[in-house]
Length: 77
Image (cartoon, rainbow, N blue to C red):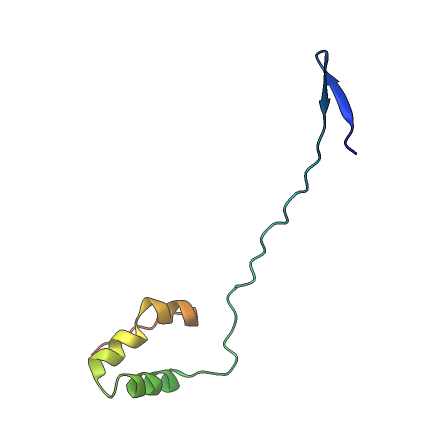
């Protein structure tokens, strides 16, 4: 049962609240599970892009790939 407190001639019923736990960052940057070389990455991109070198360049240098690997890959044609 909640306690009562007096506040300027009125009795006010106090109500406690639980503090919500802080959100923890579980999605921190993790190292890749297996060793992935740049050659493996480019070979997989060629398989995905069906051999089109311009599409491979777009895949490997994309912002999504940069976010996944945690590194920026710069290639020239």
